[in-house]
Length: 576
Ligand code: PEP
Ligand code: MG
Image 1 (cartoon, helix red, strand yellow):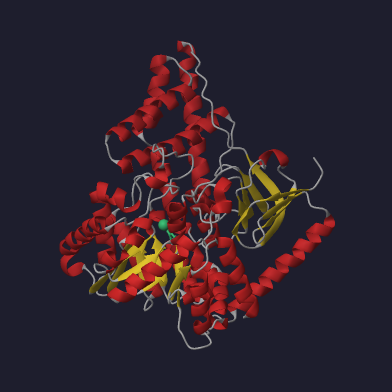
Image 2 (tube, rainbow, N blue to C red):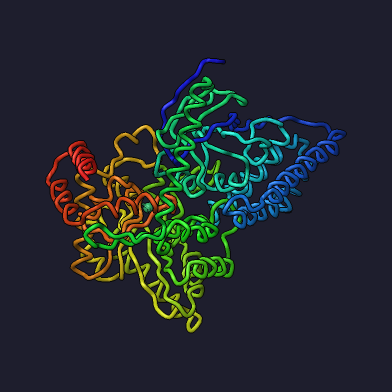
């Protein structure tokens, strides 16, 4: 293959990367069943144990390689530690060796039978959390299987010596975290959208990426030069010299523009007519906390705590959580931190895990999972309460559908508060995320029972417009400028105003500089976003006039289609 190919995708994380491709083939593993003789059994067990040792060496090497490059090295290390422990598991490893010797079958078959057996036991515990853990059995077991079969690549095993663009059909957020310390300059991923959690993670790590490019893997080979344009959402395979030069210039331009924006870090986020807009950061990994002030964040408006649970065999225990949360609070102090209770489920399942639910986005996720797994949920609440000892705890609940559910989680928070007693915080402020249409419609009632609202537009758009936020096939329909979304935002702001509670926005819509005047006009005074967007959003705030923003919002609310509204927003920006 030699001709240049340009593929359009979805810009997931801004920036430009130029490097050689590393194509990762992740086809499913096929397990052959073979009978062996009694005489071969010993050799087969040895072959199996060598594959286990190899897996241990791979995981240990990955752990050792975690230096200070990625922001999340502590988390990676813990994940890998949990996986390493699984390689010592009596039931899985010794059990598989026993099956080889007893049933005279090949190692692959024996191991896959043991994996199925363990997963069956975990599923039988009737607890969604343990069901999910069975996916870790897959993660570790598949690593050993791949070593045995010597086929289908997996990410940890691949050698990345030189800077590369990772080309892969599918990734999960936990795997992205694991790749942070490798020399991956850019990602080109077959599936995903701008607001899928993989993209959120890639933005947090600042790695230029394009997602949602189907039919890509067959058109690129490892070693081909690839350009990832995470600004326009393009992947250029085997570019000619002129194109490479052009993109090198663009890359430089992007870096200079970033520096320029960062120079305004300490300027106040105030409109030209004096209205202050608080700008906060969204973080996924504790290690990101330290970077937030560098971007000018006034605090953390959304800490997605569920990332602490991903890609590990056991949930973080209460003490580990408390230490992690405390460290985040202390890093940011005196700036506030809003903890979001875990929003596990939906697309936040690691790697080759597949949800057993037909519609996971509508299934057992977020507080629904917490209400079903109260032990796990309360452990998290207590960890947060203790982490904020002597200070104010700000905590918010994701995916609240109505008052009944809010009261249930509030009751668990109160129970947890009583349990921690004097080890708890000096004060608590409770927030409710508004990310379901039902929550918008009953916002007036919810507002009376919480201290603040935070609008999660990523989900609100998904559920209001009926568009899977992680499905690139329907991504063209996913727009924050649909009249229904603008009306929803206005309704929530009004409900907040009537109850006298602040309303913030922490979904991706808050990170779009072009939309800032509209959001100010709709009445928002606090926005939270991936830290790297703060400087550009601040520039938009400083260029805006709250009076004219109000006129803009009124006009937009009177319009019937997103196309008209988009046009209006562009015209407003040009005039400004
Ligand atoms: C949202 O839905 O807008 C949000 C901020 O939460 P998440 O992206 O984690 O679902
Ligand atoms: Mg959400």
